Image 1 (cartoon, rainbow, N blue to C red):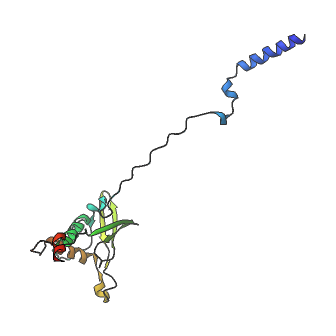
Image 2: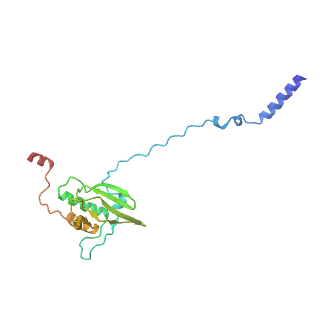
Image 3: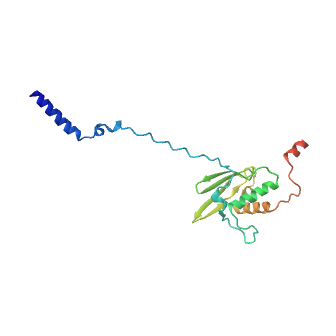
Amino acid sequence: MNRMRALFLLLTASVVLSGCNPSDLKPDFLTRSAPPTPTPAPEIVNVDPSLTPRELLTARLINPRDAKSTTPGMTVGKLIEFADRYLACDCSNNRFSKVWHKRGSGYELTTNAAQVRPLQFVCTSATDAVECYLAEIDRGAQISTLSERFMSGTSFISFIYAQGLSCPRAEPCPTQAAEAAVK
């Protein structure tokens, strides 16, 4: 009788357990899954900090112009082009722009012109057009007269346009080899 009872319990247990999936009996923390595949790091592109940001190349300068001014309306990109021409006329081996920084609602430009503090461009973008205002420029503490130390953005734009429009230099810039031979 004990044998019968043991057989009956064994059959009952096998019937009950046969309806269960063996994987259901494992706890969740024992399940194995493939480790997540690592995503590759984004490619770092070294950008020359002196390059004018793309959105500023076509950004209109909205500083007011005098009615009798010969300075045309221009973009930030064109202003930088005229400034580079001005420095090239002075035989500078540097570009006008040194480093552009995004700041709040605009950009700050550190220049290679030692006498000019960083230029502040306040910009807005309405629809697809970007407009910028060149703020007043501090020409440095070496200029003691305050009326001469600060220059309006409009005056700066006119000055750079006039100087970059044509180069009065008739002779070519001396080369480094020629300068070394003179020394």
